[in-house]
View 1: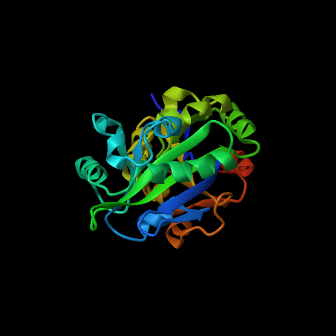
View 2: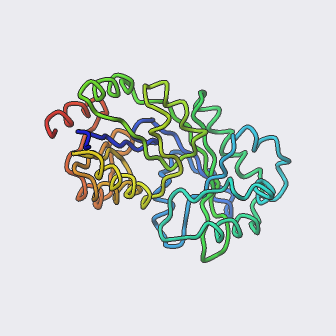
Amino acid sequence: MFRDLAVVMDGAGTILKMYRVAKDIEKGIIMEGVITSELIMKKKGRALVVPQMDPEVICSFPPDDALGKLIVGREEMLAVSCSSSRIPIEDAINIVLGSQARIRDLIDVYSRIKARCPGNYHTAGLIIDVDCHEVVYAISTGGTPFSGMKEVIRDLKDMGADIFVASGDSMRSLDSLQDLGIDLGQIYPVSSPLKKKEIVEDLKSRYKQVIMVGDGLNDIYAFQSADLAVLTVQQDTRPAKELLSAADEMIKDIRELPGVVRRNS
């Protein structure tokens, strides 16, 4: 039996207002306010890999140890979140294990995030490059829900919508979304762009209408598969042309979403 409406939302940049810091490991340069997808998509063979660990635990390791020591014996905790081309997890693991980067590189970016974004939502990750077989960026993010987010979720539920989250982040980072009224059982963590598409297509087999809400290039396949694609530019006012083409609706504030859903359902 089909239910009526599913709304799938990206996490970072859609539900959560994000601040991101990256470190160019080769140059030793800290870059603030970066857009992760731009660092990845600018070149084939790049991927964001996420050690599914609390950044505070990462900070407990000796900072001058090789980055690979984070995952020795914990290889199953590493996940490919987003990539510019298909990269098997085995290749990602080998690159991290053989990297010249230090644990200090991750601590450096996380320390900036922790100082700027107090709260529960903190992540740390790595951008690898297959061509040079190396970790090229350490990256950390912090975030807080956009203003009015709890009311948006409530309004959507009042319309009869079931709310799902498809995010590239780990479940450890996403469990605080339950405070907004989102069921933890309806959160899909560590979702690559293709995984988001699969989630939308699976929901389409169970719902009469599936709406995808996102803000980045990693949402584009899900946009193309959804019955309605809603692009939010509250985080980034410079959306890629491909996103603009794939979107059916564009909003500047997430509080506009219930009205968009109501008009199109």
